[in-house]
Image: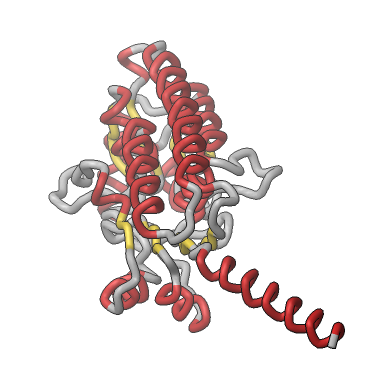
Length: 294
């Protein structure tokens, strides 16, 4: 009888533990940048799964059938939206249509249009002030949609992270303010820094890849036109994504007919711990230093 009672108690304990785990709803995040922000908000108050691998391309990464099914079982989906996750958008939309709570963060930050376009630019994270708004939106939806969440812990962690974002914003403002007027123009291999330029008073002469997707390809005429602008502005550095080949940027440098360096920036994804940009805060500081030096 004693053995039976012990077995019953053990089984009840297991069921209770499983129930508690189920109540700690999983948050599924599409990109590693948003994953870093979400983990900064929730800590260990809820499990967080990030679909995009570190160093991946948010425009082109895909998900397995198992991951797609996991989206529909999530307590909350956190996605960038505005057309960024081209490879997983239909899965996010399908899960949302099936009733899974979903937060499209880009829609919450007053998005800007692309340069010379009316289409919204999804790369809001280059502006830390908009990231502050994004973090607040993530906090609010986590508290509203994730069952069993520790509200006090989430609010405490969020407030601490918002303070760090404010410190980053002030530091970046001081750094960019020191640039002379004639050295405030950017050329990049992909249209990523529109928000940074607007926030800190920089100009964007042009980009090597047309449109908003890193999957696009420039024509010879595109490169020739941009090369003319580079020569006219006296650009000495072209910034290319560290996770993507910089061949096109180097071709542009050759076409420009001037001495132009190609400098790597961390633009759309984080790095492993030893890669220089393992967190959003690290990424923005590294990029700021590289842009100032370039």
